[in-house]
Image 1 (cartoon, rainbow, N blue to C red):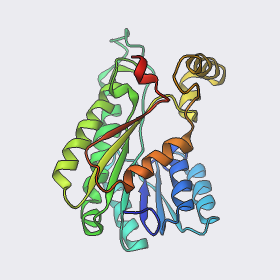
Image 2 (image 1 turned 135 degrees about the horizontal axis):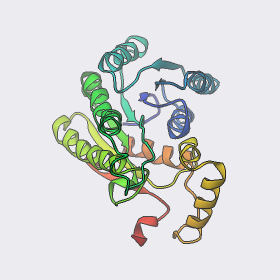
Image 3 (image 1 turned 90 degrees about the vertical axis):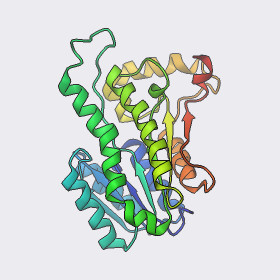
Length: 254
């Protein structure tokens, strides 16, 4: 498939990586973009306006991926508005900052919330859009994380959820073939509001500066770079069930 002329659904499309995906898809000539949000309504509306300014119609939809009814409603609205869906970008995600040593702080509620959004939420979206994606012989790509490959990140539950997302990617790739390809990307540190929310402005600046001193590419990954990788994975017609690491080469040092 090609992004040009495609209808693309982007979950968590109002901010950060999701916003960058929407704008890059518009620049590549997408026929329409559906962007979902759970809380960031104003940001989603702004992103939709920015996409429209690139002469691409955009439909912002409130859809918490942890809610089956909302996901199914979003899928119906996407097909009603554009007549088809060619690509799904599973980008919505959540975490809680819980130090690995604080096992007591990683409560059942935290586990359930993270897994419900990061893993089951991606499955809900794939399930809701299965038939239009099969009809268009489309593709799915999910935003995983380098935390899927190593013991680290914002919490144990987050890393486990992203590892599970990669297994979901492989399972869906086998199940939906040959009609729908399914892949993932695994970013490392990305300069987004997500990171400043976890570390604070000064904390993230210090953390990313120290990281740049040692990683091979000596640069902090930007949202638009991840967006280009996500969209490229949608277009790679001979690739399915794979995860592409995007971390400036940091994984080479693990």
